[in-house]
Image (cartoon, rainbow, N blue to C red; front, side, top):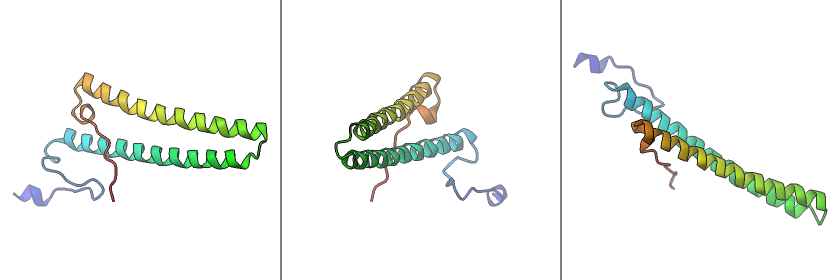
Length: 113
């Protein structure tokens, strides 16, 4: 009973049931949070990149060089998003193959309003 009062808690990562007794659970929770945050930031960056590519396309005003640059921005943005989601799929497959519980059942938790 006394050792529960003396436990050190991390204010950033909430303490879940059994996290102190099982360090793998705490590590898996941290991995899930980090990967989810990375995915959310990547999608927000993708949306910003597409917005700026659209702005550059409108701003090209028929100039072929500027139009080609904006077209390349669109292509690179879509390819980048594909790489991000492919990385997520590879991480999940590695978790399934090697039996890592935190990665095998990994899901993206999107924020809700």
